[in-house]
Image (cartoon, rainbow, N blue to C red; front, top):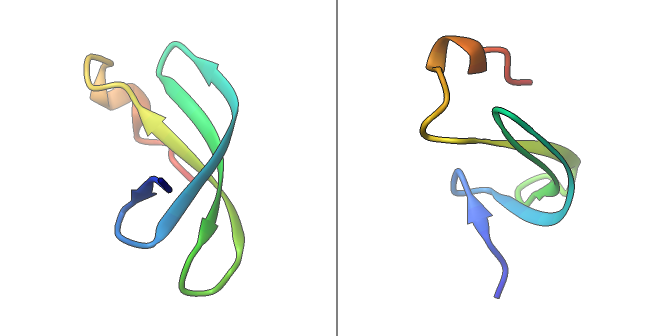
Length: 53
């Protein structure tokens, strides 16, 4: 089953990880555009995870 995040992004394969979370390839289901999705860990310092693009 596909995992949908944010109501419009379908997650693909995991492409990286670090101390603040994991990075996945994804697709914007509304536009078909390929995107990168960063899943931030809940226990991480929130001030360090504000730089999401």
